[in-house]
Image 1 (cartoon, rainbow, N blue to C red):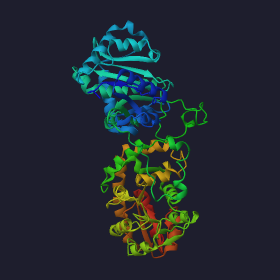
Image 2 (cartoon, one colour):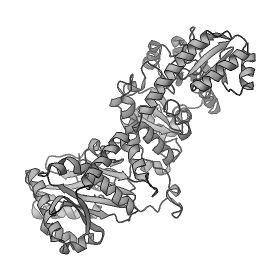
Image 3 (cartoon, rainbow, N blue to C red):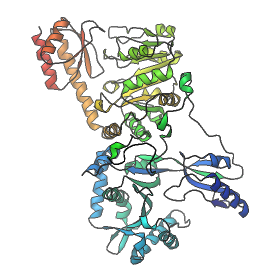
Image 4 (tube, one colour):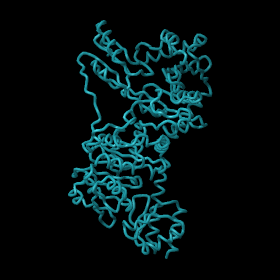
Length: 615
């Protein structure tokens, strides 16, 4: 772009972005370029979610740019709410760093906000702003400074003047940072137009990026605002500042020799049923990638007078998906997960909801479903409700860890469900047999990993990117302790995820559930500690129960429960019930057995005492 004359227009050079230019505006831009004899046109910083058909029609080509980065603030002004939200986003350690930098900087500097209309009375602030931005331009290669004195004067006389102010951070007569912020047209948020830091000041260079960001969040909350738009930037850095909404941008360029590519659409999986392939994603979920933070939403027919709960839940969960994948990729046995993207993931209302969604989206009436009893009963239940024939191929082996691969392949099911680790068995299926089903079968293989965090053997989640017929179901209900939040996860080929979206009811994943999930995922150390405690207590209880005279056998377990066979099964169940202890009687699935969840030591001791009374 810098090597030939270029007409720039229709977009936004700096923050905030504008909507994509209209066909009329593009026609005018093309006409003006022809009048000037300029061979190249640039329309910068267009949101990828906008309607860009007119840009393509005019021969412009998209070139990826950095994303807009937005920090959404808590919906209530309660004390501590800002820190609670930031803790969900960045974790307790990074929140502590933000607060510490802010407190240290604020001890010896003053923060001042000056309305742009009052700037003539503060010439020192105006001069410092211009000087810091000139120095920044020189550090960036000497390109023209877009925030020189003339530009600042023009802005002060323009339509943004009444809602724009300069913020400065100064100690005595020295300005360490200066920037511009403006309220959005809907009055709900704050755009950071520009910030420049005095790089000759070592404290400012080291501390101000974190400190001034936190200060702006406090200012926005005290002003009753809902979000702060930080501008464009690298996602990893902006996440550490609390950004939780990233809006992809493209520059659009028309130049000699550039051909306009076809618009890429998400390919639907060949496993989608014909009715699902014939319909779009329902209702508002179609527009989940369209950012709504800076729009005035008069489309949803909700009550605007009763607070944040009057709004529908956020549909764009891409950032939460990134958080989930990043978190579990660090767990042992999760190689390959880091290569997955948000397009490989769908949040569901518990993993059970994922079972129903995939059967409805990927299996037509008459197509077979295979289950491997003893297993989670709702696989077969939902299949029968949807009029899908069910084939049962029981697990084999002393530990119920073997599947009859050849028999399943011979049945040629559309969908095969494997619960691994097993429920109620607690054991892992032979991985050689699992791989055989995935690589040799024509149908889908669904692996329910509800308990995999308690296992020391690898997850299959990292293989999702390699096999388009593999679906892995996960949940935050078990190891992550969020059963009440109803957060399930389906990991699959993006084409399968697209099919599931066409069946899923919009707005089922509430904002409260999203906040709970984000908080738990970004502050996961208590979860990891809890998993270690459960494993240790599981192993202790397995040893104690194995020696108990009421017990015939304790099955090996890689879950947070034990499958136990009793000598006098019915008497034991009655005795436990009489003692106020509830266990899962699974004797109909595995004769004379109960599934016993690992509780804390007090609960486990009560169980052992009640068992002794049953002798």
